[in-house]
Length: 210
Image 1 (cartoon, rainbow, N blue to C red):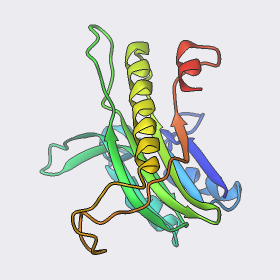
Image 2: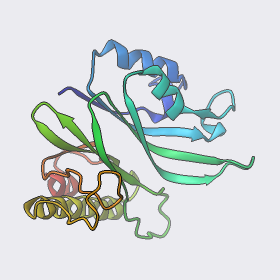
Image 3: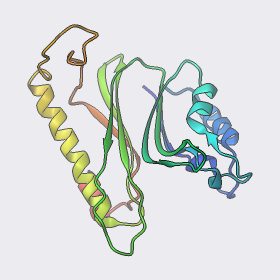
Image 4: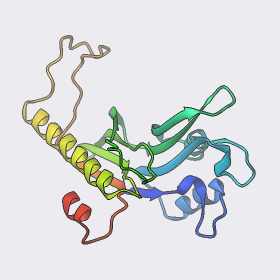
């Protein structure tokens, strides 16, 4: 399995120019991937783009990679001022079969005088040749160490819950019909956590993650 994780900053390059097509071209030059985990993907938010025009980057990226299923989790979801919604979050594209998908809001304890935004962890269960694997695509807070540490604790809790659930053989379903919301789907203990953790090697957050 080959995976790419990249904070694309809504298509902004190192030169400060926002050009999502250039980002897409860069991904293609890196080779063939089974799973793409992208952070800072925007829907709306015209102010992020040089021409002031809102883009649905989820739709554009899904169109650019046919044969991949697209799964998006918005950390930020606000009115766009024109009757719609502006969203900002993480996108996972997979050409492997995807089972369950979870969208976990991460904690954001208030910290006076520190800017921050809501954060989310997108979890997809992919079917690999070696079996089911949970791929978690997340982006931790940049400005606040307190929030990063709290978010890492939440990720740790998610993993502990998944391990416990796997050891129980899965959540018991009231109705085992495959089209029922109570149906039991694989959710293994095995997981890969990727994304932008916004912490330095050797930092307390780094050690908490490892």
